[in-house]
Length: 223
Image (cartoon, rainbow, N blue to C red):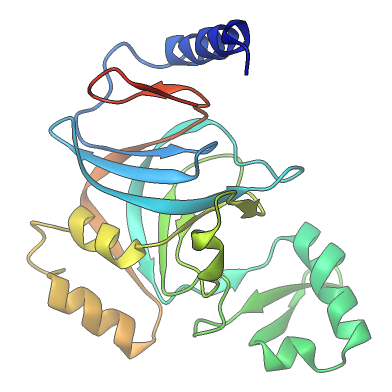
């Protein structure tokens, strides 16, 4: 790649930095959408980093800033209408019984409509853990039963949400200090298989960012 193109790439990423607050919260969850990596910072230092899966072309993960307020263990999945229409209803038509076999139920809505909800379980698209934060895009961080994608170099494959390779580890770190939600309590809640919401003692900032050029602590650039 010509050096001039790398310079332009650095300039574009510096511009993205200027969109952010001058000082970031010292405790934060930061996702690099382009690299598909999540990092948790404590006291402004990384304490855990994990592979992620972010939005595929056409379903891009949005750049945003919010705050995680709660974690749901064994979450049901309320399927977005667009996914149900484009993917799930056609699968049911082609393979009758597909929805039932995969834990979906049809919910009647006012006005004669219907929507799909997938029950919690080993086949749930959300896996066993979901991290909720307010945003207008309907995206969140979550577990997944599909682990093979984490081994791929290119991990832009989701519908826009961020799938995590180590969601339970992240949940335990975010709930650290909460007497009710010890690591053993988290494991027990997941094993029980019933949906339960754990509210964080303090909201933690979350940033979904798009870095295609970034430097490490020694100033070495990656693209």
